Image 1 (tube, rainbow, N blue to C red):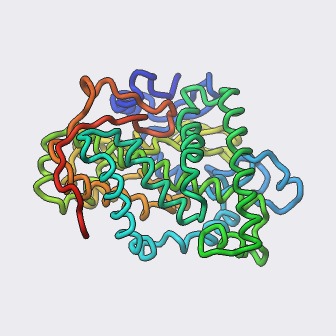
Image 2: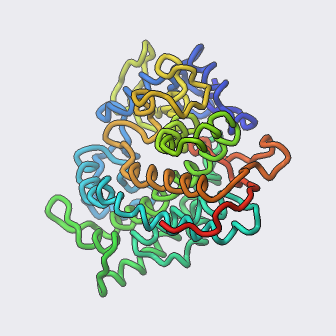
Length: 410
């Protein structure tokens, strides 16, 4: 049975998820050789049990401790996303201090200034593509600054990000996708190798320098580990936030009652971001490898088999969320904090505080400066969804508006 939403439902997979939760909550897809899991409780079980449901891409222990591991194909190297404890704990400890809520909160004024500058570029036109004009450039600017890479290279970064969100369609074994990803990884490794050499010669106050200096398990990180970190931080540091910003405005424009409620009460901005993370989760699914024979809700799953935990479906589970198909920015805090939009367990998104802050700041600036915001297309049914089944969002979001305040001072 196909466990992937049909292409024509990619932007609205909710009915598909509901049907799967009802009739096939755990099912094996023989074509893709992978299990699909759709209910909230089962998804949480998978995300919370790393000893049974592994994130490591290989069966050997997930460390880069030998020359053979370091010489492995780049996409097979263990990383923060593709590793289990104790190695995962070591990697997370290297970088976690850079993304604590206290550290991230200090970026708020800077993020707001960037958001205002981007609106300054489009406000007199009365129209923009939210994705191209704000949702992409803002988070990639922030993460590039944190890493210490030239923001002038952001078009290069955009090309890599587009390759990620346009690959992995419903056939996750597609050979061309694999070749494209391998090519992208090689390009990124080449790009960051030059920056690493420069940081060895001339350290700076940035994340890449911190990675060069960092120690894990009593040793400095290997070059391959740093390169993998750089790729992950650059891509994960902005791709999710691009979709979060786009999905927030899309959901508000499609739910005008909630939009008016928000316009009249900006205190609902944080809960609006949380509801977007639940309702239109930027990351829809994650893959795990079963490390030992197990039984999940009566289904026998063998060691070595792959399994997809559908976060997007879990976040619409009617046993957890009241009226799950309704976009409701006034949901109780307990329901908002129950969502798995940022994952769960040891792989809970390290950048969640930064993504939340960026989403909240952009939404606040848009509410303050733009009036009569609406779609600049013939009905929102013409929106083009991302091709990936793992990422949820739109490639473009054309909007019209009336200028409010041309410039906004803090």
